[in-house]
Image (cartoon, rainbow, N blue to C red; front, side, top):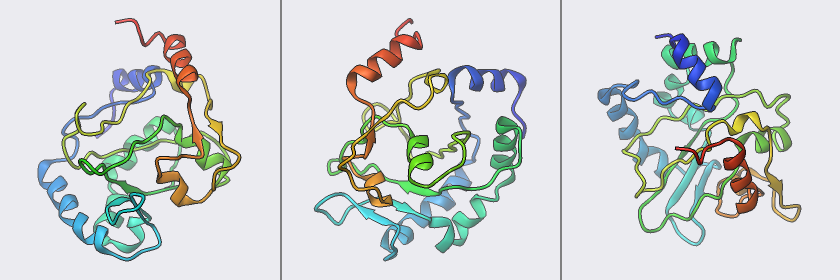
Length: 196
């Protein structure tokens, strides 16, 4: 599948694009069936909620799990990435993030590119996140929130110079790079997101 010109224009304007039902329910079921296996595996990429045995995220799943390894080569996703970035693409990072009910901690407002450029040495902030929701996401269960058009502002997050800089610190509630409330409000106003 290719994106339409209208979808590309919407992505360029808003900085994100939602494609409901792009992955079939049967394909999602295959991915979801792997989660208990991934969470149980004792790997260096597994990160827990602080002080618990509840998994918060698992990095590098494509290295240890053949189902997720196949996902990174899934042509419909690759085609979209190449169309949006107008180039060949490669995988920089793969992780599964969980948002368990009642025990999950917050995710502070942040920009992913800040971590990739400053910590990982990514040579450019021209990157694309592809997110697959494996379960229903709504306002009650820890939704992903975005500021439309904020990608046009550039990198705005502030760094905590005292924070640890390792992959585990990128998945805790105390992120090294965050966006404070005032900066977030200014970004929303600058992007005219408050107009309805």
